Length: 62
Image 1: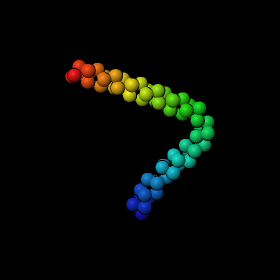
Image 2: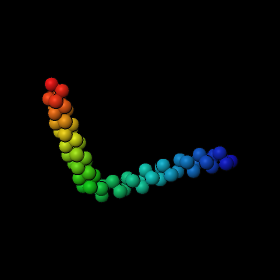
Image 3: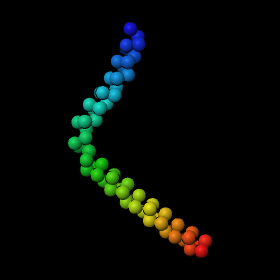
Image 4: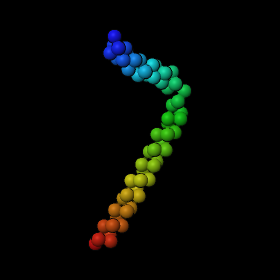
């Protein structure tokens, strides 16, 4: 009895959270788009910085 209750309790939070996220999704896209854009620019800057640093290091080594 208890094992089955634990399994049921373990499954319900995930399914309920998934159901809870679905309705929120449509209202979020603008914010998520901004976040993805920010992360993209941040990654771009990081890559650019890494490239510059590696270039400087290669020049220094040479």
